[in-house]
Length: 138
Image (cartoon, rainbow, N blue to C red; front, side):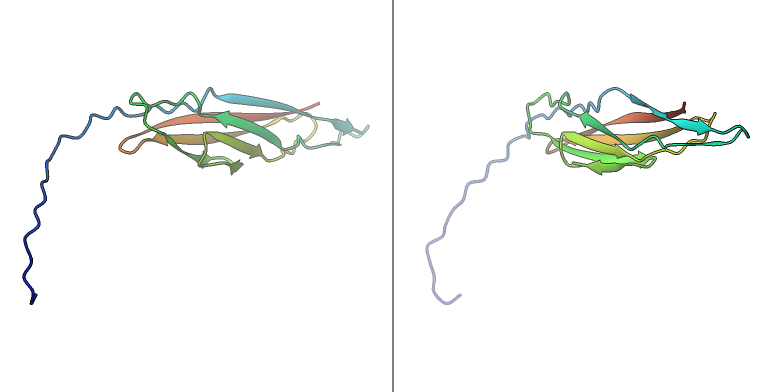
């Protein structure tokens, strides 16, 4: 503030923002996984079954797209059910479904819902997929 200097000028020009089309999220088709539990019985009408083991399901969001060609970011969320997710910030998600217990003559089923959010720098889209894991006592 004690020494004067020559002024410096800056030109600023406001331009309208480029249009942005929102991306489209594609999580894929719903998935059904079938398993069989081997059961044994005894003459008294009871028995035991081995569980249907854990299963791995791979989901790919590679069909998701952006009309402007903007780079996409991905985020997967477990909405309901029991599963372990690996790669939640990637276009490929690995889901591990836990093993299921059954008893002779009874089947089990579990459902998992997973949401995919795809976003570019200014917009986002969601798609939800359902995975059903059936365990049949044999």
